[in-house]
Amino acid sequence: MAEFTLDCMGEACPVPLMKCEKKMNELKVGDVLLVSIDHSCAMKNVPEWARTRGHNVEIEEVDDGEWEVIIEKTN
Image 1 (cartoon, helix red, strand yellow):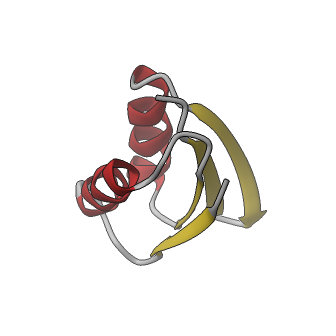
Image 2 (cartoon, helix red, strand yellow):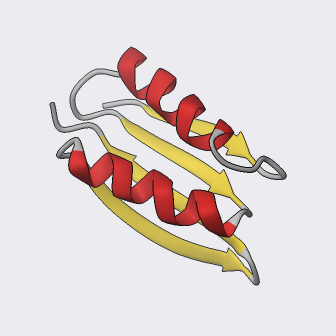
């Protein structure tokens, strides 16, 4: 299992979602992607997209209006 980070701070939809999708396609099952987000639209869309693909998702609010989305690739 490897851990990767993706900085999407300051980026509005659909850029963070597109970056996540591209990066997740490069990962192996069991790998984890940590995505830093500060845009509320991306905060909703990225976890929703990952869950519909069957991945495990956790969300942590690291600061006011800043989140870290943890996506574990499951398939």
